[in-house]
Image (cartoon, rainbow, N blue to C red; front, side, top):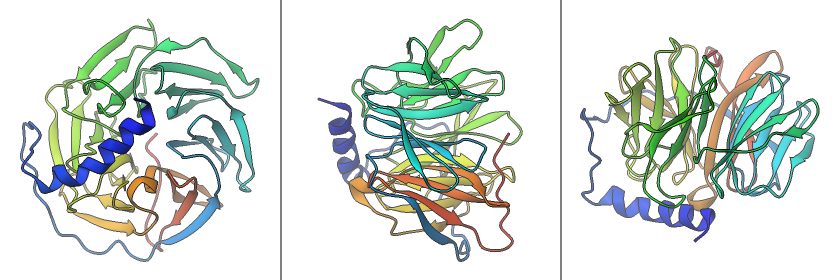
Length: 304
């Protein structure tokens, strides 16, 4: 069974799990907290008609790298799209460090590095996963929720200095997206099946706790990112919404809804440049890159 078919099956059974009595083994209980409205965010289309989009990464020049079903794209600040790589085995998470773009291919469980100035591609390394996050020390974290084939591997770590892989570095039961906290002391991840958002301390990865649960029956959380002011933004794939979540209080609200839902819903969210300001950018399995422009008074700055 291929990667896409596994993912389809997982997304379709999220509803059954959410409505049933299945509970993840968690060291801390989660509660649903009501929250005020997020304000009037404007939704704009940057690019459409692309392959099923899995992930995105800002290029620090107002553009983005995107991972499609078999391609890696670049979209510049003017919305012009070019194919950077083709024929890749289900590209997943992307991370840019200077001119080096690191990305995963989920079909064969490999980590690749692309020199974006020369378009030279490195030899692949075994590092099976879906989401991808670069830590300040250069190490990479990845997630493997179990829908890609095989059992969940929690969060695994690639050691940049040695090239070694620490599988199941954090034994969270399921994990999808990854986001670094502003103080660089923890990462946050989310659970596709339960809507839980989980905090993982970097110095003690197996003492993870549930920060909160998104107050929706079937959100299907797929990815998340964090702003410098400590707010999380999460893509609810099945519901077709983007949530803003305060992990300290558990309060949450919907930034945008009705983006596209079910199988074609939002798959990844990042903070990026929008002229002189910043906006949220969202990929979807419907092949669309969208920009979510915040209302006045909302400051968006990525964690550095």
